[in-house]
Image 1 (cartoon, helix red, strand yellow):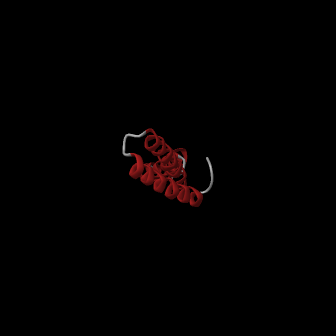
Image 2 (cartoon, rainbow, N blue to C red; image 1 turned 60 degrees about the horizontal axis):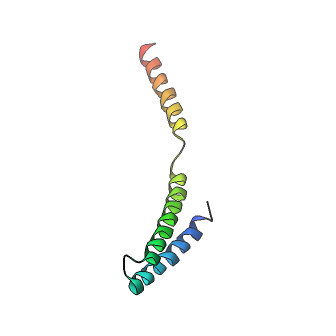
Image 3 (cartoon, rainbow, N blue to C red; image 1 turned 90 degrees about the vertical axis):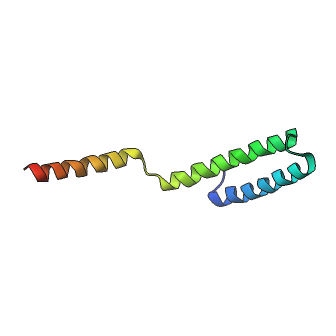
Length: 79
């Protein structure tokens, strides 16, 4: 993955503007516009991977936490 979230945000804005300019110059179906759209899509995907990686904890730690606390609740109710 390239760069930090800040750098990707800057690249997103630069490439979004480029797409807008290409669209204004060549129209929606031109190869330049389509290629730039793909570049922007990839940058958006990179940004989302970085953003969501910061939000999510590994699922295994949730399962372990849930299992331990559920087991403790079961033990305390039944013994």
